[in-house]
Amino acid sequence: MTNTAPQWNTITHELMALAAERKTADPTTSYTAQLLQGDENALLKKLLEEAGETALAAKDGNHAQLCAELADLWFHCFIVMSRYNVGLEEVATVLSKRRNVSGLAEKASRTT
Image (cartoon, rainbow, N blue to C red):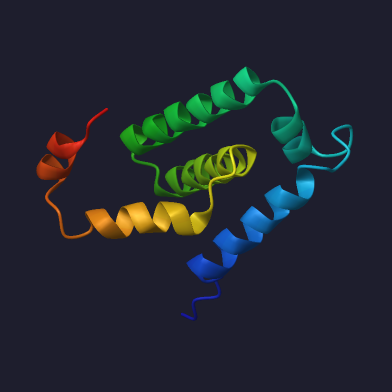
């Protein structure tokens, strides 16, 4: 079976570019523009909703549904990142710094 899925790096950069474009798009014709330009609380509630749906899909054990919910959650994370001007590279830097650190040690080192 041939893997035809886009590369992670490609799709994440494409989605972030889309989000950047939609910051100035017409919100009457774009859901993403509505999220980026609309009520801040509505966007953050949507992110929480998607996280909850992801957790429930994981608990249900439906692999296809979990993949779909993860895609929704990540998409909305990208929208939050765009709204608050957080770049992929910034998040990658944080993840890279944590790569060889115990999760328990990393959590204990946080000041907030």
